[in-house]
Image (tube, rainbow, N blue to C red; front, side, top):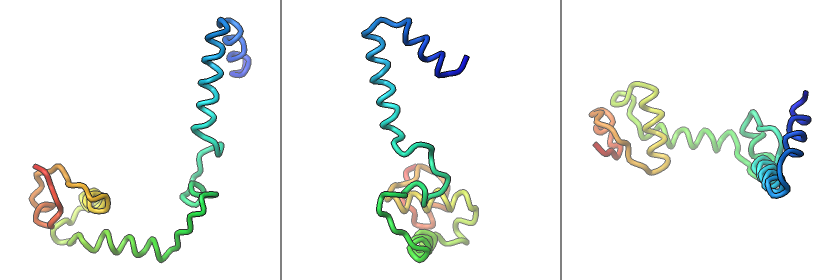
Length: 109
């Protein structure tokens, strides 16, 4: 039995009020993913949204984020990514890592 057949059979066994709830749930699921299958690239994600991000925009954002993190103070890449994300979002890090604190990254802890 296919999934479609199982759904139909299950719906038929429900009272009318529950069938209505099921239909509303299905409509809600359709609205959450109006574009169909999820896209595999950023260009696919923002397709149809009139977003125009150039390679230069991306390079500038990288320079802006990584330029604030001295490699000698924050040498480990995972720490650099977390710190850059916090800086970009304007949020403090919850950490006791003295290297991150010494790098001037706002921290709590």
